[in-house]
Length: 279
Image (cartoon, rainbow, N blue to C red; front, side, top):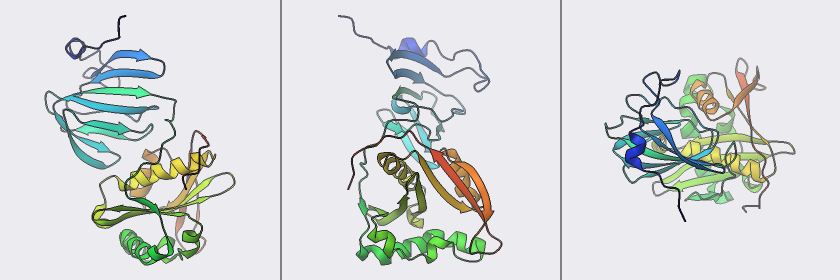
């Protein structure tokens, strides 16, 4: 029986491929094999990695060289032997690649990605005993926006006791302490992110993106196909991040409480896959 086999040297000999609009210096990737929804490629970018988010889940396995990997703003070093998972639709790229940098790339599954299994170390539902920590983290995380806007955003002044009692608050802890939180409301036809907050000392590590993905997972497991959120029009960095991970702006409206503020409503359509209650 003959098994499909891909040879790294023979694939690299085919690079770069002819130029394209996105890769004027020549495309730095080539197909190695395909089976069903799975495809295997070699990717060897030089200079600037110009790739866009992909429709399928993907796994990078670095074959040679080193680089830095930017996953929606969270940057980490990678080297030969490292494996990196990227959910469908997530913005990402390699930076500062060494001259010998080459990685395998595996794509698989449906457009929009497979429903995730919730496996995040340090994740737990909040309890009433966490209330004080939730308030402190929220105040610290939103402090730059409180200064920018001249008054605290609503999550800073919210009473979290009802949300905790309803099981809507999730906490992410690391060895350094409470890293972030997610407040997610499930409604009849959509889910609503009320707040995503990351402790200032733990920002830039991918925690915010992980919490957004968690919200998507809970939404899909609830059998809902739309995830919504709203933010302030002056929170431009947040809007850019939400747009990068697939949210679209649906409306702008006056803030119901803060005179002169503008609320930006955003939504993301998800493949709806009902799943078991994760407790």
